[in-house]
Length: 383
Image (cartoon, rainbow, N blue to C red; front, side, top):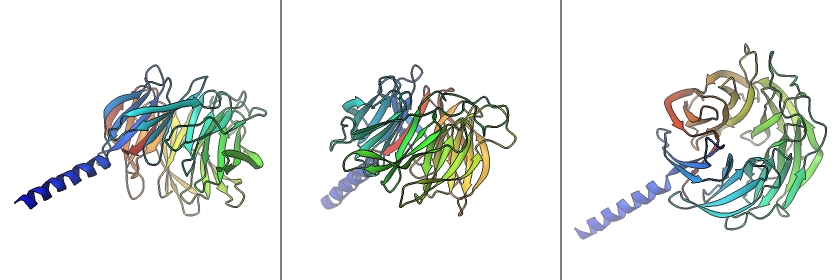
């Protein structure tokens, strides 16, 4: 009798521990005043539903964030003139505890990424047009920038040459505006985009000394004048990347030379339907884990462009799906690739779509999650 009772208690304890270990959190960064900071949601992996909305940081305009691979540390950037990055420890219950704050190395930080080994945080500062490299300490806190690079040069063309007929998508070609920075999967190279200068910068990553070493050449030009390079994702093999151009609403493929770290421009396609005319700004993009499905957010057109990536690297555009919201700023796939979430900034909500496992087709789930001016979502398991 007693052995059975003890066995039952042990089994229940194991089940409880397993349940806790499988808790997923969705962290959402927002813009003031509609958004008040960073919100934490519990994510149900079976239904994709977001629940238990909790404000966990009131950092002003906490619109950009990234979580460490082990889920123990959340990094949040305040998109202010005096840019700061906050390091927060995530405990077992999903509560946040501030570790420290440091300068982002510029004004208006708009993108954060961690190097593959998690030893450095990379920051793109839009307003100042600069990028910085911040060492990550053993406890997850941040040191002051170990390297800094200021973009400089002639601004790109004001009017995007490759935009569709009737487009007035022209903004910020008045100087340097760094928009994204990230290391390739091998951890050897780093790339950053500058929307204002129409450039993609190329670096070699010296993680030992915390330095970004300009490659040869140090940058390449955007795929067309005034295109406004914004965000990119790497291919599943790490042998290239897909880059979305904000002003022209085009998607460009670049091959990556593994030996030199240089990008070679490939084909460019539109992220908008063939018949569309008028203004739209391309925004975020997401790629499936196997690299076969690619999704792009179109602001103003308010759609998700769904592409299938063929074996030869070419794209087939399957559809442009209405987001059911306004001004989709970014897209997030869950860890299993079953759900796609859309941050609809102007309609103050998050919408989600079921992803078909065979062909990546999106099906809208008729539920909305209210949150003011959502900018970005990252997902983690509780530590």
